Image 1: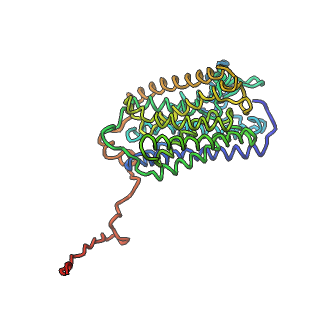
Image 2: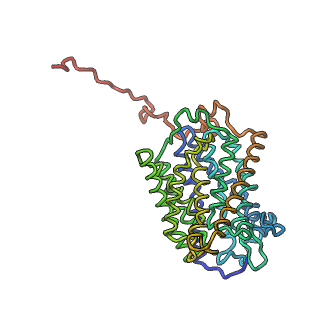
Image 3: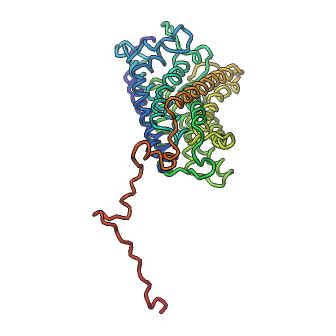
Length: 446
């Protein structure tokens, strides 16, 4: 990478952004945790939290090198896994990524890798072994996410560094991860849900969210962290970050309102779950386009993402795959909406490189690039994830026994319960309180 002078303001902003993006994974844990039944909440939280450990370690050892190492053979498919093994050489004060130390950039990107993997867990709530999830998350990160990050986020430069083929040969625009993260995770969620099969009683018994307060808290944390996710992807405290910040606000706000309107017209009620889901759908949709569209374009993408995802969550019932928490309906569909609409709405006045979209006189070239990039990631993730899941299922079994699923995965997998209700009905001294029912007065009718 080209060596530039380090800017302390840019560095400070990316460090803050990295912390904001890392906070999104606990936010996702709350968002998912509130949507499952009470007997599964701890397992749902743990699946996100353990991903921070698994992917965090892998990123330091080899993940960054696969994603941002010099492309092996110049093909743009895989970064050299040995070039930055254990982040070797990144403490060099002359190693920079733009105007920030390259180690800061590596830290920022680590948070992206973590949440990309954690997103998949929502599709397999209530039924996947915790040990199976730990192994799957490690293998998927190595074989799917790290290479995809190289394709999309690694840009070639004039120093001889060769990056990924989607960013450089195809020329698809993905500012902060619509393809590498959301389409990637959504396609993986579909494959994993198919392999694990539906939950017991799915489609026949209610499986309602047990704590909508947690869901809204999670959505709020995700929205907060997403400003670091998108605006931080400018890799500097600059005008591009400002455009991404405003578009992130506009896209999420418009999508929330659009989702609520769909609910009101379709179901008669606007729900808190719909509001939280609409926020996330808008954030997903605007992510790839955050620096390539105008604020008006962001509003359009938000509305399109909110409406599309609100209807897409019903596809699982039609096609018979049990995507427990709608990862496919929100992340795969939302990522596709945002990625493809760049081909129509890319504004030549925006900070992003490339020609304008179809609506700005740019023709079909950018739309074709967007479709090619999205399609390649979708197919690769779907096929490779299906193979990974099938192999792991044969080797170790990925699904908990029926008895464990019925009684609750929290108890069977973690020997814990999310809510200790054993003290209910007892005094602070451990003596059971007696419920005194007044005896009807003899002269009650007097």
